[in-house]
Image (cartoon, rainbow, N blue to C red):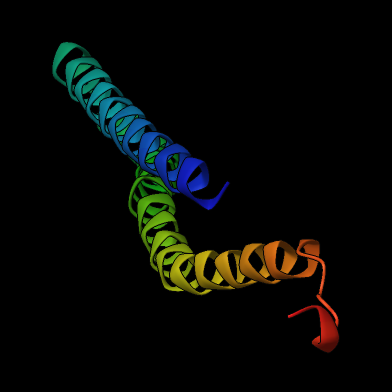
Amino acid sequence: MLETTVLWLDQVSAEVFWTCAAGLVLIDLTAMAVVMATRSRELVNRWTGRVLAANLLLLGAGLGVPAAAFTAKLAARAVLPAMSASASTATQSKSAAAEPALPAAAR
């Protein structure tokens, strides 16, 4: 189960990063095109804060989600060997319990 979670985290982190990168480029290119087309200083003053906020949000999500996913993957990979070792121990103890014990006189 942890292996599938690690694979899912890889997929999600890459998808979030590239989606945020595309959104960042799209917003900035649109803002530049509008400013160059209108040459309005009032438009720049009015929209700079909003464009900056959108950029910061996209940068935070685009870098934060992959960083959190990387940390979660490291934690999962650290726990995975311990879980597989405990699972193999449990399997061995079940197989040992399944064998009937012979009385000492029968041996």
